[in-house]
Image (tube, rainbow, N blue to C red):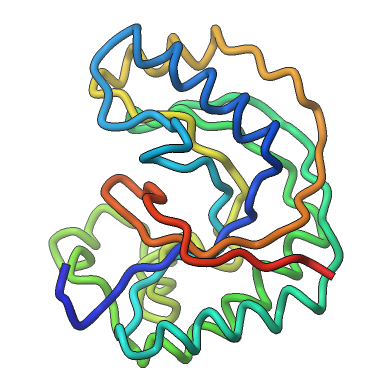
Length: 207
């Protein structure tokens, strides 16, 4: 990563008991096969991404202050579990995309997007962007992140396996017992590889 830019993930920060349940499953997955990562809440933190582009490093404090102000505008949203899913080796928990979650996502994207100053991650070169639909490429150009706005869907990664077929099988075996929960905070994390959150910079109480 260019030292002049920093990739920050603004997330729904999970309640401690939910994050622990995710880490427990991640630990089980790590015993089954080689992984790129598993969530353990020590090196890799459980989270639900809201928006994770790169920003000029000098705008970091503005990003954090903006999120702090946004958090005051919204009450804690409820997450309703949908299903366990696998794709590209990722094993994830998917959740309903409610109107209250949508409002938070869209507000954060609209308020933070100008702080990118039109910067797009080096990863999204012309050759890499060929992997996306034209609509997602437009999102990359407009928001610096392919899964913004109408392509956003709240999900929580448990792990990424090197064997994609095994990831599919493992996803079918996982039982997730928590059908719904509320998130009381937003979090700002520094990011690592594979979309991971590796360092909590700050969290912000909702409401």
